[in-house]
Length: 304
Ligand SMILES: [Zn+2]
Image (cartoon, rainbow, N blue to C red; front, side, top):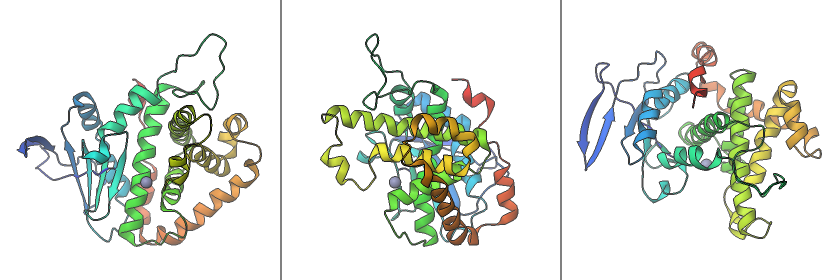
């Protein structure tokens, strides 16, 4: 996925023209800031999304989330239109540039595809082949969860790379695991919103793939470096149910195949141990307490 960068300007935003692109750079007003982090918002054709993300200070919030981490290299966080990799709904981390790129295309996709109810014929049930908004979920949950989900997934790639953490397994799965684990660290309300939204996003992609390939996963999806979209949806929900069964029991009963449920506590425990052994040694505990007290989702975020 994508990158984000922040630069200090005496607390005042300024704009400059670079290579034909208006680049707005502003000092992070957040009290929590990682000195290794730079952020940038590149103004795109998606002007409304650009303004919304900038106003919401999504990069500054990601910077704050990273503030307890003793990063072994500088990193740039960027929201941008990007190159070919940003054309589809995407975001990515570029290790050669130490740059985490959040693509505007991803936010456009969340607002206009994944969170939109798919029109069905009268009496037609919602199935694995139905894209769009999952019944019982809200647009806000999908947009917020899909935003947090992609951001934490890319942050996972960045932390693995910068901190030199080995991945005994597929990196894309590991990035999902750390993203799901982090969603669970800010209380049950944040966990519920972000997991539901993330589940909906991967359900949507899975439904599109099945619709385009006669109800089975396409060969391209099966060969991809990512797990199948349907698996990613279930993986996030299982992690959540394993970590907080009281909050996620109802959702798990509705959406998690019974064959998977008994293993979910183990899966959360595995992620917990891995986080403690590989990430936690380079985390400032006092700053971590402040981060966990952050309101990463605010009431106004739900007013869409
Ligand atoms: Zn990834």
